[in-house]
Length: 332
DNA sequence: GCGACAG
DNA sequence: ATCTTGTCGC
Image (cartoon, rainbow, N blue to C red; front, side):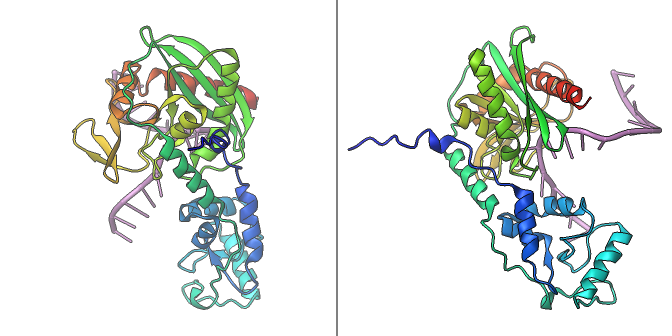
């Protein structure tokens, strides 16, 4: 049997990240005069209904214009700016659209959603699923002498600073740190944080590797395998950069708490993918789940080893403080 | 009315 | 995540 290793490396690279605002603009141009569409219809054309919230924010942050043919699923106009809503109403009325007494449009005869679009989010989700298959969540890993931390802070909506720190487990001291400042090309969408923050994380990791090897285990601010497609940001960092990662999230994206009262295991579709942990000083739990290269139990042991006090483990706290400090300095 | 989803 | 006044707790 022949050995084929041709695309092994290539397949691990990040996919081309689409320009989502541009794709949205292309969709708006397609809506015919005299028709309207909904935020959800646009989101489905982009490939995922969950993008509807982002679309509403994105369009709502612009003055009325190319998006005046977009309304809510109920037929109401979106937003709270009454002047702008009156203007939108006039523009739609000028195209022959009728409003009911309650101010809504009857979508039955003017809703249009026959978009032509490559559905970029569907492709990104498929890539995340491929990544999840490569993620290891079973290896038992001993607590290493050094544990790393990764976090990102924002200078502006499209500019960020990533920070990497290394903590000596025995003393809790920071023994190494580095930062990387870069443009961010993708918005925050629930479930798609990977495409917003993975590139800057990878750039920082590459920079660090020029200088020294990474810590054996790295905590990443965000979800691990406890993700709708088992592919949170910590999975992306671990599989693509080939390192051991643990997702440390302040909020639970998905999954159900099972067995274990104060610190329940977290399950998704019948698989245990994480655990809620409460520190000694804090009352709000953190959601721990493996990114890549270790089991839930090993991930929990590593986090506990660097979480003596405070709201969050030392590597995450230090990476957060450092990235925030550098991002703030970059503003001034 | 309920539910609400990393950063 | 970031934007921000007042407020609560150690």
